[in-house]
Image 1 (cartoon, rainbow, N blue to C red):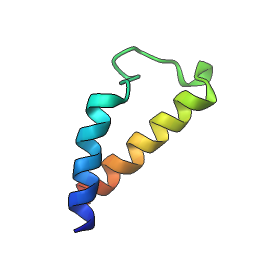
Image 2: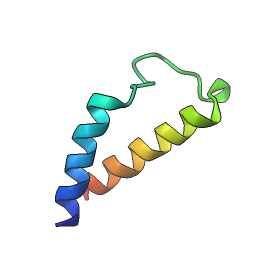
Image 3: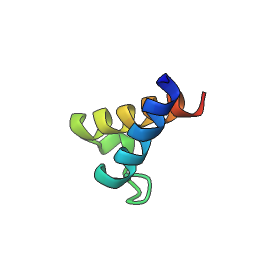
Image 4: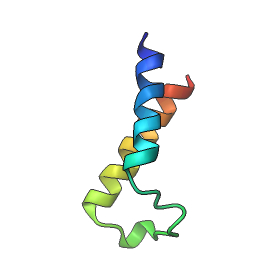
Length: 50
């Protein structure tokens, strides 16, 4: 059940949230909001895979 929720969240994230890796964002220059988005996407992806 939990894995299905994270898979759905991952699909929503892919559509709604920006992909900073495609924009070649330098993590040293990223704002706190950008770092929070990166962290959220990582957390959801990690749990969707497991």
